Length: 185
Ligand code: IMP
Ligand code: MG
Image (cartoon, rainbow, N blue to C red; front, side, top):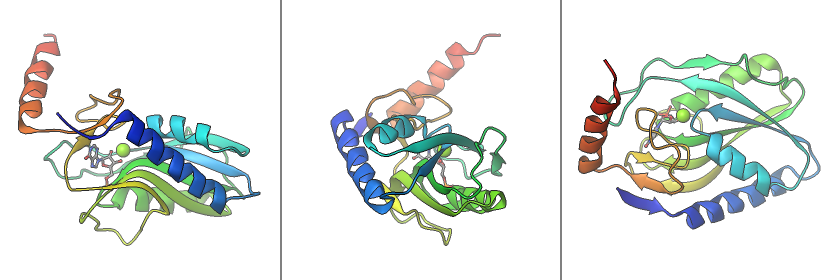
């Protein structure tokens, strides 16, 4: 697997984004909402770099997809989310690809009457955007490659890697044979 960003580079990028967020929200109380599941690692690191009072919650958005498959129907589950009415909400997601996920989650949040909704993404893939929406804060702009680690998955694996890697042909083969071995029955 090819390393795109090391643990240290990710740390520095997240810290940089935190400084921008602090500057934008000076004197206001933030409500951070992480989009499950891919954002869990970046949320955990980002919030510890933001030195101001905040509330933290989650929302779930899932669509079936793999490295090569196209986007499935997006399902948004807001049952786990905290009350955001009248709040300044900052949505945090792992990656902005076509943009459909974030666009739909932002639209969904409007139902709960927040004071404002902005978004921060660790990664933005270059040349892939289909939605009108653009995130307000971006950690890194990356080429159009399928990446894993630091929260990002391929078929629910690799989220625990401390670095960001790009999957190569050989990785996909190994993944397929390991997936076959670990399935009992
Ligand atoms: P979008 O709706 O096309 O912007 O896709 C956003 C979602 O697709 C992200 O929250 C990820 O779950 C997933 N995704 C897109 N590209 C990648 C990738 O390179 N690696 C892992 N997940 C990805
Ligand atoms: Mg995701």
